[in-house]
Picture 1 (cartoon, one colour):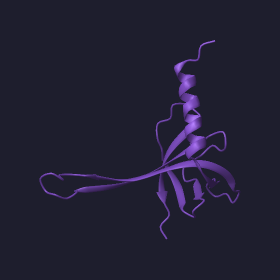
Picture 2 (cartoon, one colour):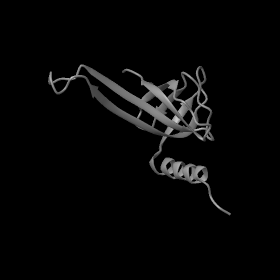
Picture 3 (cartoon, helix red, strand yellow):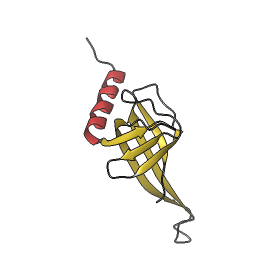
Length: 112
């Protein structure tokens, strides 16, 4: 039996998620029912603009996204994630999905 590319890719994603995911709690919009989940939170600051000529960024973009396992929960718009460190994130925009097990969402961080 040969293993195809899709099976190898799915196994690799499972390994990455189980290795790097952290604990969080998911709440559907308007719900008080807590669902324990594992998520990978990716955050970065992207600086763009004319750095060479002007020497400063014209645009700074904050990248916040999470990767969620749909076998644990089916995430929906405005769903709330409470991370293990206390950060609160709201699901805002689902990125294009490939019908796989994991969904990628852009999130908004709750301001204190």
